[in-house]
Length: 462
Image (cartoon, rainbow, N blue to C red):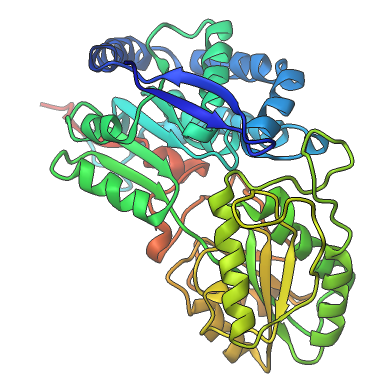
């Protein structure tokens, strides 16, 4: 019997879609097509590559009315928020715009008479993208577009929870007329993925997911010398200073904590508030959180849908229960239909009286729960922000830019925000430290991670 992958919808537990996994023969054929197509694709002028990317974007956006409810059925995001195409447009357009400059050969900094010396940026070859379900279009496009712009071929393996996203990308590229084999969507199980990574036929893999998943990727790729881009776990902190614009900080941090049911790579999971404004901040944060409407994501009134899977919601329930046993105080306690063990439906929660002995302040939650701690000064806040195995983003809430920079210089993180959070600017590199992973996406630096340097040392006068 053919093995299949099923999308179990968090909306009602039904099988929303089911697809057969690829056969070994089909996988091998896909890789061979990619290798053959990549050679010709690398000879295609960058401007022409960009036209294909923009045509793909147009085709993808044209599917919005179908895609929005499709996302809700697959991973639970409310339809009222639309798709992810604002960010997809911004990232695609920017990476196309900067491609020529970012991929231009770099001349040697010390010219020598009679010599021509420069470093060319060659494509890596075949790039595999293993995309997650939480922002299934945004996270995938981070690598797909720059990898193709750099002259690579791309094989996409999307998360089982959002299989249909891979098909949508394939439809959009086909509509754009992209040469066959340059982009391919495949359906694989874990064993097949590991086997392919260990085959030596993939030149670069980009994976967004758990720390455990990242370790499995590294292990599978061991000895192949492929390059890796790994965006793994996060426990992103915020620090609210006494001079913060309080209503702005409250509104943005509540959204940063609970948008997408808290299932955001750079979502806010812990907040440290200076003692001078702690009570005011907590009061506002609780009041704002109570405005959420949890329910069926297909309902326009719903502002928080179910988590993608029941086991993710159960983890949040466990973190909350442990925190309460250790002395934390819960402030929302919202009554939500079907909010029980084994259900993906879960109300947002705000905890105070928390500390770093509780898992909710140390381990990734990736759900609608946040702990708020009072701090006396910058030193205490910085120590707590750094007391984590992760480091993707940190946000600082103050009106003093130089103060924010001084704090940011000491925080162990890939991105420092001031007066905003939970956002990815394609002009800035997206990267993490510690267990959050390695590599870099977007910006000109992202192109460096999707190419290999090749030096030309040419003696012209002989």
